[in-house]
Image 1 (cartoon, rainbow, N blue to C red):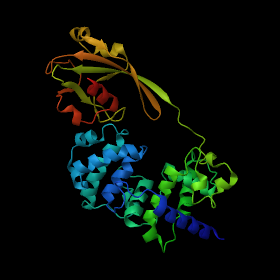
Image 2 (image 1 turned 30 degrees about the horizontal axis):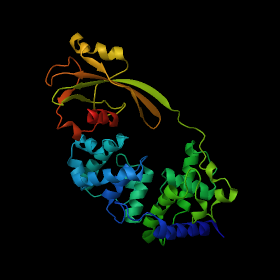
Image 3 (image 1 turned 90 degrees about the vertical axis):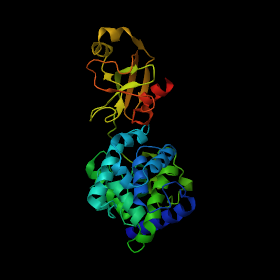
Image 4 (image 1 turned 120 degrees about the vertical axis):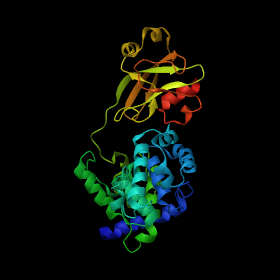
Length: 351
């Protein structure tokens, strides 16, 4: 059997499996609205479906169209995103909506080639939008689909190398449905590949007996699917200690300032941050220092970094000067709607 015939058989099995066993009732499915699909794709990057569901619904309620999102302020967008993490996604989401409105008349381009030119839309996301919404014959390669493709094809290349990543894109393209059936099958095929990676072709202990591709899968035939994909270079975890000045007034107002870009929590409203207790104290007048109270230290875990956070609380009247510290007093009724880093929000909600 030819390689093309094998690839066609793989695609047909994925499509048939997805129709019966795949995910078909998520809030962003059963639609060809590129706004909803794009929003879900950005939210799902490095985030679990269960986490995204609530955020997706709240976001759509507040901003039901790309025009609403483009017209919103960045603070509004970050407020809706607050707690979802990876805040560069929210900033790019806002920029992308503005580009769609300004450059494309509020209509999403129908091809991956043009979609990828928009802020925050990479090759795989562009392909997901164009295949799911418009039936374009293009491959996606998110983390789950990479795992499926490398295992099915037995791809041995080290994905830490850019040249091997390019070859994997070619392998993923070879697996696509044939051009003559692609317009009517691409949406289900793309969703099926994502579903297989999320529910069957797992990183550890893949459910090979439940997989529709086990008869075609080279990794399964070799008996060692967990060694795929191959990636030799791994990011090392690091840690950082940060001291937080939690200045709060009796009426609940707090002192907040936007974080600079780039940097930790870029663009979010945040307590003043310092590299040491001494630096925090030196930023305050003697009268402020006397009123400081240490709160329990805790660890906030990011993808590749542990933040050791040291909050120091300062009870101070709203409107009173905090010296040269940048920021402003934000009332108790206003700060919940702002884009706040998750640990800052937790501190404030705890009170």
